[in-house]
Image (cartoon, rainbow, N blue to C red; front, side, top):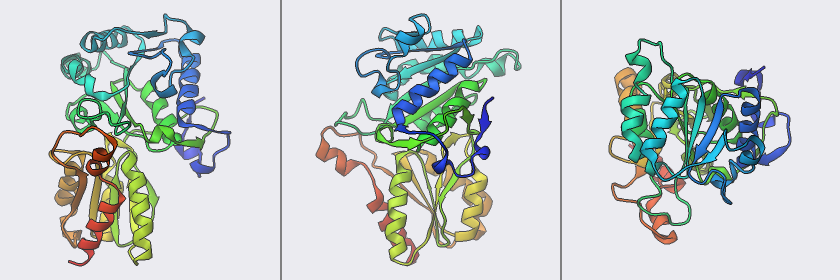
Length: 340
């Protein structure tokens, strides 16, 4: 039996032993593979020493190379294999160390995997998961550091999620593996260093459901992925300045929970969206456009986006620190807004 998120009133206090985020994902994959023989895993480096940051450690040895296997550097072909396997009744998980190279497979993803269900009138289903690690790490630079959630979300026929906590990581992975359409999971490298206590049993989190991480009355902050942690740090600083903040962890980019955002904005009248992506055409723009369309009369000040500058990601630790936006920028922008 797979339980629902609502079964756990306080996820952060859910029973179980504390474990690293990567170990929790590894255990979840084992549980799902034990429960469903149609689940298969493959990707570049899936069974090497690093094992996708530890997420797939030991899985090839446990389940055999027919269900867990390394692959050549041929993203387009492999995305096609994943779609074909899904159409034939399997539930493949295609792992990427980085999402940058999914761009090599966009034809198979956007023109085939996401469209088969629609073009067949719902007869054919494509239950596949594309997992990738995003964000800054060791100075990975322009071709290894991109957050492309807005790109994937633009295409009808798929879902895109960005977990923030180990609890959400497990629940959203289970939901993705049970879904009947392609799901893109983007895990941030920094968040994979977390640890947490989660239920041992399987549970799922409904995609399209955000969660309120902190309550406040003066400002609404909507954030994704690692920017949720930055927003929480900013909220603590702002509290000392007399400004209380609603921090919404959106969790799911497509579909996204506009109801939780609209409800908060109607209370606070102010909005900031912190997104792990470039400024142009990012998810923050979608949130703000929706708020202006459906709750404009409640806004007391212009909405704000905190995101990345319109330049390629630089290499090296020092340049990375200048490029990536954090809690300081959130505090600065909110302080400016409340003075309007």
